[in-house]
Length: 339
Image (tube, rainbow, N blue to C red; front, side, top):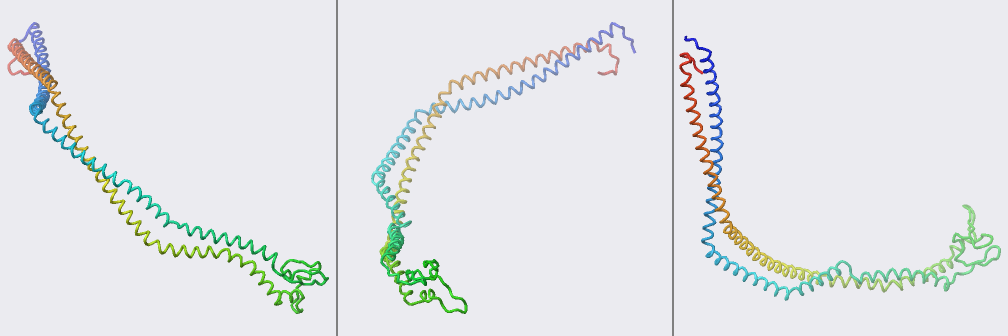
C-alpha cells in the first residue's frame, strides 16, 4: 500500500469535507423540491377550482338576459297570486270577522250561563235573607205578642209559666227551679213544666217564631224550584247552540288561517326567487375578481415551476461538483476502500 504524504492526506481530508457539505446541500435542495411540488399541487388544484368557478360565472353571464326574463315572469306570476290571496283574505275578514267576534261573545255568554245561573244566585240570596230576617222577626214577634201564662212562686211572686224550669231562677226563693228527689213526689215547678198548659204555650211561641221564617223563605224556595226547572229546560238547547257556534267559529278560523298560509307561501316563493336572482348577480359581479385571482394563481404556479427548475439545476451542479471532487482524490484512496 502506498504511503500518503502529509500534503496528500490534508488534500484528501479537505476534499472529503467538501463532498460531505455538497451532499448535505443536495439533500436540502431535494427537500425544497418536495415542498415546492406540494405547493404546486395545491396551487394547481386551486387554479382548477377557479377555472370552474369562472366558467360557471361566464355561462351565467351569457344566459343572464334570457334567464332574467323568465325570472321576471315568475315574480310577476307570484305577485299576481299573492295579490289574489290577499284580496280573498281581505274579503273574508270583512265578511266574517264580525261574525267571529259575535260568536265569541255568544259563546262566552253561554259558558257563563252554564257555569252559574243568576236565578240560582238570586233564589239562594232570597232564601238566606228570608231565614235570617224571618228568624229575627219571629223572635221579637213572639216576645211581644205571645201569651206566656202565669205561675205563682212559693213566696207569692208571679212569673211567666214558660219561665218555670227553664234552667234560670226567676223566683226570689228559687221555687221555679225546684227538683224532687228519687223517692219524693214532683215539685210544683215540675208539675207546671209537664202540664198541658205549658206545652200549649210553648208550641204557640215556637209557631210564632218559625212562621215568619217560612213566610220569608218560601218565595226563595219557589224561585229556586223555578230556576232548576228553567235550567233543565234551557240547558240542552243552550249546549246544542254553543256546540254549533264553536264549530262555526272553528271552521271560520281554520279558513282564515288557510288564507294566511297561502299568502305566506307566495311570499316565501318570491323571497326564494329574489335570493336566487341576487346570487346570480353576485356571481356575475365576481367575474373580474375571479379573473384577477386566476392570473395571480397562474403567476404563483409559474413561479413555483421556475423555482423547481432552478433547484433541479442547483442539484445537478452539486452532483457535478461531487463527481469532480471524487475524481481529484480517487487515486489517493486505496483499492477496496469505500466511504
